Length: 403
Image 1 (tube, rainbow, N blue to C red):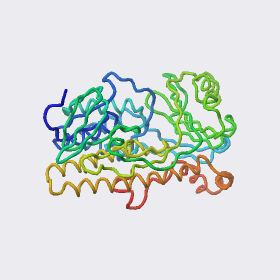
Image 2: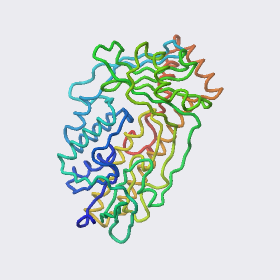
Image 3: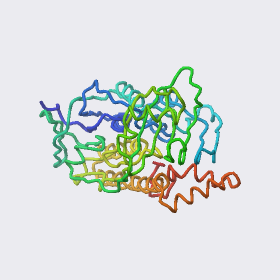
Image 4: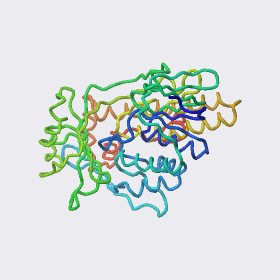
């Protein structure tokens, strides 16, 4: 079975980045078809990417008026953040409610909820979906590119935006590789359900060397409907010592108090800092976005937010290429150069964060000194607060937006 006619644009992947790319294309009045390997009734567990930053909310609002505002209203916006070192508070800050009518600095919600908002917006915008379309081949030539699924269905298109994730079949078919670093240690992520009578404050709390966890780092982040715990394991910790549901039920009360065993999801991850060698294929008709193009650690919330910026930029490049064929190569090249520069900045920033999260002897000594001085020198406490997330602003190489 073959898709009928030549599509102007195909988007591969119905995760948040692919859905954002589809909406950005529809905002430019372009017909768009989305191919997704999973079935329509797929279940995607866990909070995954929690934070949608203001820049991303604003981008989603441009793509679909009311979308960014709706996500912001649904998500949690915590106003207090605290940092502890060995059980002693070294930093605390509480923000005001913000200006009426302005998007908040972020919204914290599960990725499945973000995707629900995006899917509803895509349905309203008239995006076409093909489910169970697992890509097996991508052939570019002349003025078109054809995407073929494992079941034989094929879709010819002028351009393809690949947002099919870390194991991107489109990236592999294009012969583009990811390069970068991978840390040895792993982290455990746990989603815990909220309660109607919950007395736990809605705050983001970071612990250096948590005393109840034998000096391991712990982060607690609220989201709509519960909160997430991130536990940093040591390089020699067995994977099942902390990362199974049984293990989590054993250590979780030490972190959040007795009786909290209402676990929704448990996962483990390693820090990856990898970026694609190119953000477009050799034909200039396949553009990479999101985790098809880069993988970052979750600290700093760079993955989803940079992916949304990729999606908007890719859609703009494709729209220019379709409307002005004489500018097509320049528009695609500019997208690829700009977004790869942003990805490299984010990769370096993630490396800076990793140096604080998995410190060597010298960095640990600096952290201890800063914690000791924090009551007298507030700047030391501020450094301990911000360091685990890496720099948020950079040089022009960071491209047009923060992420």
